[in-house]
Length: 125
Image 1 (cartoon, one colour):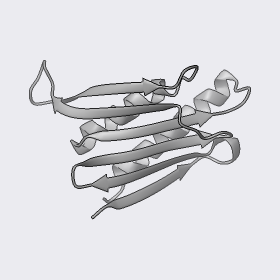
Image 2 (cartoon, rainbow, N blue to C red; image 1 turned 135 degrees about the vertical axis):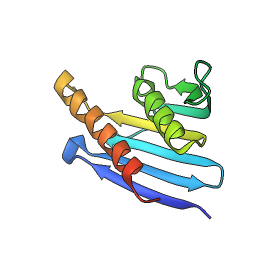
Image 3 (cartoon, rainbow, N blue to C red; image 1 turned 180 degrees about the vertical axis):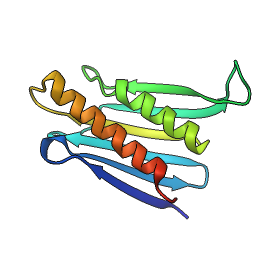
Image 4 (spheres, helix red, strand yellow; image 1 turned 30 degrees about the horizontal axis):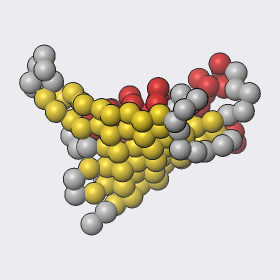
């Protein structure tokens, strides 16, 4: 059985949507937002024991960014946080864009992304 959870944060041009499908062996996530949601990067994060401390969980991640996009800078840490928390592989597609974004605008979008992730981690799955 697949269970899908949708979490929305922010409003207007700062709206973020995190859609997560929980399968038997991993999570499939979509992280979109801004004024032009799109496919900007794809990440696959696979949890494994840390090389420094086998009691901790770390990840091996493969990242495929689209040319001229920076979505991978957010997608990789989000996928890794989810993989570590759920101890499951995570496939994540991310695309967050805001035309003429100021540094403050980018901070709001990024913070809304992390708020969505935190809400997913706290949800009763």
